Image 1: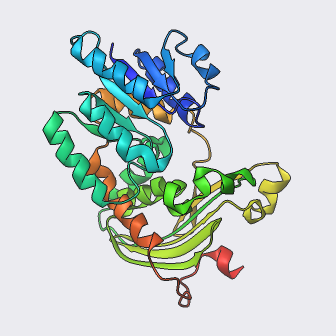
Image 2: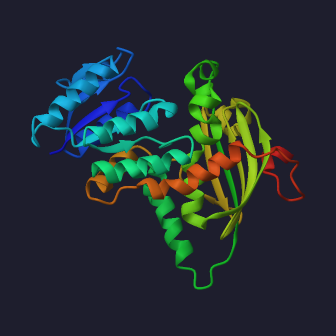
Length: 315
């Protein structure tokens, strides 16, 4: 049994991490969040110490580190706002804990080099959550692609629409500086998926860049990708709107729809299982997608060439 601590207890994603810690047979010792609405702990670890000041939390972790192997924190889980990930990962390494950080690991790619240096200095590892790599349908697709006797380039269309209300813009998620914008906040794990499936990017163009939606095209080693990300409920397909759905995920490969709308419930637990078994996703795994999204965020917007635009831009 490993000892865990967690930063970001009151956030949206925290329950998935709490469930993963519990379901892998481990113990949450302490948690911190500046907001005190953290009753979710009662469902998982009611005996965990809870803090609203990061300084007191840090002091406890340092005290436990000095108390010996049985009490010190083995893993720090980071699910705080994106712009704080880098600092909180550093905190975990300083108290000699391995770190499991929610996506994105960092917003700016140069911070990865500094974290890699700190891994070496403190003798601990930094892992991140690339849960789509654990989805059974996507694993099957990767195996199918790699089994082709003569691999050919694919035409891929990625659409991800996850509607958000007015609150989004006034939260940290609506701040480009704090979240990295929607390409980072909702798109980075999809860009990681595309690179994982189809190889490294060789060309990147952006055709739309708004606060609530982005679109563009990618050339990867084994695919041409048309992508569209949106927080706008009006972009949902009519049948999804009629059914009352607020999220739509779609990937087509050479016109064939890949079904992966379900199967997300326990992906964080699977990531934890793999990480604890020594097969977690580290800094170098996440580097290509962080670099790609950084390039997308700083790319000039251009008009799409014929056949280059995502269908939602032409419909």
